[in-house]
Amino acid sequence: MMGFSPEDRYLHGTSPAHRMDPRVKLVSALLMIIGFALMPDRALPIYPILIGIVFSLAVLAEIGILYLIRRSLVALPFALAAITLAFTVPGNEVWSPWPGLSITDAGLMRFAAVMLKSWLSVQVALVLAVTTHFTDMLWALSALHMPQALVAIISFMYRYLFVLGDEAARMMRAREARSAYPDGHGGGSIAWRAKVTGTMIGSLFLRSYERSERVYQAMVARGYDGKMRTLSPPKLTPNSLLIGAVPVTLVLALSLAAHLIWY
Figure (spheres, rainbow, N blue to C red):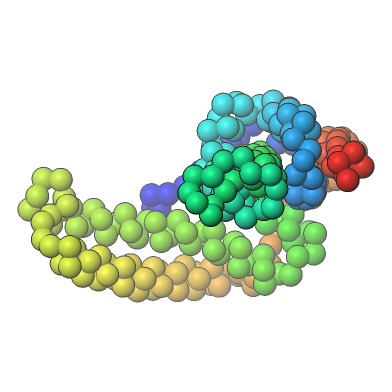
């Protein structure tokens, strides 16, 4: 039995967002993220409206707003890589921490826009992941005519992350069971620890590879041919199209209005 569940993000529910066609949800989320990306940097007054739209989606999906915010904070450390924009974008100097290095107003504005865009995009992706089962997501990709090879790669990449995690957990339990130290960490120098870690990584790769071969052979024996199939494919309904079109239309309209105002 796997120790990691592949459904760690999906939350069962009966909300309108859960009942939507996965194709509509996937396309809507993609268009909203594109709308966020196209938003001008100087359109900072628009972002509270965009945040309100995303929070409305969370309410529609019966997801706690605090839950959504807490989960989306994982993107902020990666977005901090854009901090260099505050120093490299030409503009009026705001602060000079060191001689020859200054922060500009235009750089700060662009950095803030990148942070907000990344945060909003992650929240939309989270709403999609929380309300859409992974197998439905794969079916939607296939139904939207994404190449079957890419769909299969995404499927195996996602599922074997948990195979890898399961094998790593087994190895850590075995290591702790053989350790003479109560905390299971053991002693030794940094070089010795690095050698042990390297050995464990190599062993983890081999064990994961062998296990994936066994899993694949079992799938082939049960008729797997690389295609996604479902016994009851979702039906595209006007209600799904309406719910998906409203936030997309609002975001794209705001992006267009922002371009007309700030350009």
